[in-house]
Each structure stands twice: as C-alpha cells, then as structure tokens.
Length: 340
Image (cartoon, rainbow, N blue to C red; front, side, top):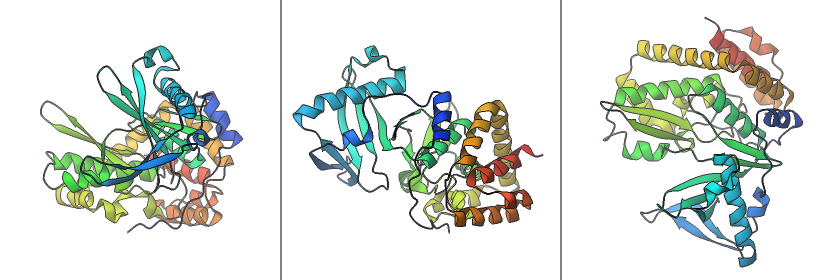
C-alpha cells in the first residue's frame, strides 16, 4: 500500500521555468488572478443532483465587483479556448464560480454557459505551483493526452479534463457496467506505467478520471490524471505506481482477473515504446524542460536520496546514484525507455 509521507509544500515558479513557459507560449498576460477571486463576500455549499455535499462552495461577489470579475474570467476563457478572441464569447456567460474548500491549494472552478443551447464548460484558477506546472507539461508531452493551461505571475489557469471521477467509476461501473473489462484492465496497466516512467505520484482514484469512448463494436477506456501536484516529489517508488493504492483496488482486481503476467509485460513494453516515440518527437521541448527541472528545487534532499536508491535497485542502474536533484532522477528514468 502506498502512503504519502507528509503534506507537500508549494514550490514557486522559478525564472528557469518561466523562461520555458514564455518560450513555448504558456506564459500569457491575463486580466485577473487567483487573489482577485478571493474577494467574495459570501458562499453557500454546493450539492450534487442527489443532494450530496460536493465539498465545493459557490462564492458570491458584491455588485461592484461581480461585473468586472465575470468579464475578466470570460476573457481568460477566450485566451484558453480562442487565443483571446472575445467575439466568440458573445453568447457565453459566467454561471457560477466555485471554491474547493478541502484541497491543499483551494482552487476556483468557473462554469461558463452558452445561453443559446445551455452547453457548458469549466476551467480552473489556481495558485501556480512549479510541481504542478512541470506535471502538466510532462503530461502534454509524454502522454496520449494534450493539456491546455496558461500561467501569469503566480496564477495558473487549467482547462477542465472531462471524464468520470475514478472513485465514482469504481463505485458505479466496474462491477456491473464494464462492457470490455480486458480493455479497461489493459488501460490501467498502461496508465500505471506512464505514471511510473515520468514520476507522477499519488494517482489514487480521486486524482484521475476515466474517459469512455464508444466505438461501433467496442468500448474504449482512457485513464487521465487530473492532479499533478505530486510530480517528482515523493521518495518512495510505490507512490509513483497507482497499483499500490488501496483506493484503486477495483481496477487492480480487474487486472488480476483478466490479464496474465505475460500480457501485462507486453502492455508495459508497448507503453514504454510509445513514451520513447513521444520523447523523440519533442526533443527540444523535453531537453529545455529537463534542464529547467535540474536547476529547480522540487523535493527534499531526503526524498531525492530515497528515490534514487529505490530506482537504482529496481532498474539495476547505478546512474541514479549520481543524481543530485529530481530533474536528474527524471532524466535517468526517461532514459530507461530509450534503451532496448
């Protein structure tokens, strides 16, 4: 069973990382920041359609602030979705702004609605944490998914990642409604491998969603991380392997039932080959990102020492022992997938 050592601190955006973000179009000047959304003067609990407390609160602003705040969050949405073209925002309005009261970083979630057809979308406003930004960029470069996010000063804007929350999926779908359990078990193996290779930790069921795509004869599953705060932080190898979290037991048991050890190794090799292909397709971005990570502080000396010892033993590779920071540990970890 994987256990998080202690609450992780927030690491600020360094000059090295900010240079990377500017170079690749992630740093954009926007008109409102996380601190501005804290100016609300009241809030009420947000309940789901079954009447359960979601642990989010809908916040309300004074008459004098509301119009300005709503206009500016629409402007951010236009930057996120249409490169700042406000003409596409004419039919959109801000339906709700919610605050997550239980999370470490307490993000805001903005709900945008199209008044013509009532279609809606979300995005998030958060305090910028270097660990999370590195995690988002690694997800964008090394996973099958593309991530849209923007940074300005100490604020991070993140698009919503659609899917069924992991804990809800395991509660409602795994036992009765999984139409292709082998495909789902295979996807969990591949997700497990992706997290381990790029050192994304804490992937228990609250931190990922399951995206279901019907095909004409099949159902396809994609497991997507939605929390990147534990990128390259923890000192135990098991924290980077979703298979060791008891919250994921339903998916783990599905794999034990439907996948042989030989098939599992095949899926792991397939995923590592795909990561290698992505590494080769974005060599400049990856090198710039790793160089920035190697200059940044992303964890404690104790965690770095523990993880490099753990990985050196696992891979039988003494190169890990020479690492002095998490960026170097990640570089050696990624090098493993490039080796035959």
